[in-house]
Image 1 (cartoon, rainbow, N blue to C red):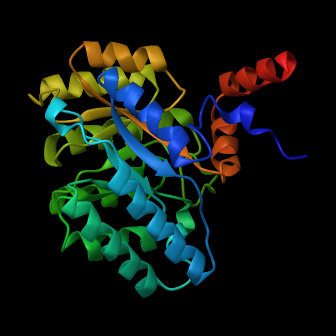
Image 2 (image 1 turned 180 degrees about the vertical axis):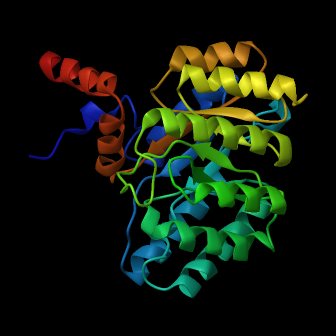
Length: 286
């Protein structure tokens, strides 16, 4: 049985860009930055990959520009939508074409991180593109992966803006930490290193413990609230998003949209029991 989209509307801004853009504007009106993402992944057809690239380019051109208000809207993309699983050179060409348009519009592009099978490839493609577009592209690192310790060092060495998250994909113990206390400890360490040694890191978490730790780390190392941002997902911790903004921190909301919403929605349900309860309440109301 295919789930009706109404159940995902708490976490997904719409099936089309036209549906998502008013939500972007409303979040901007509340003083929140936005990263807009057209959902989809694991494309195996070249024509579909080119279509995805062109859809991202259209997104760049239509993204609300409110830089004069101090708001940094940007987009987030998955390389597996642009041919990563077909041919990496083909994907890199698509990425460079997209980044050329992004640079023309001064839009930052975040390369989303998928499962660990694509981590090395994603970071290799990032570095290849970063040489020509150092101000307009940056990766995501997942604290749960064992390899992230050295990846943090590498990104600090390059001087890259990184989005740090815990990680939402199921991974084996050989590749990732399984204990949440250990993942939190790793996250705190990586966040502190990024705050100290990387430009404008994104502290992507809904975890109050990690939010407090990031604030304390920033204070300890004289990192001002304009030198990093907290990042949260659309539909989650909405009150906290606005509280942090009122405290003077930059807050970015990741806003996904698109017809291929089910994999993203499923990951949100796996992450927290509260998300499942929200969906069940809506089912009972239907």
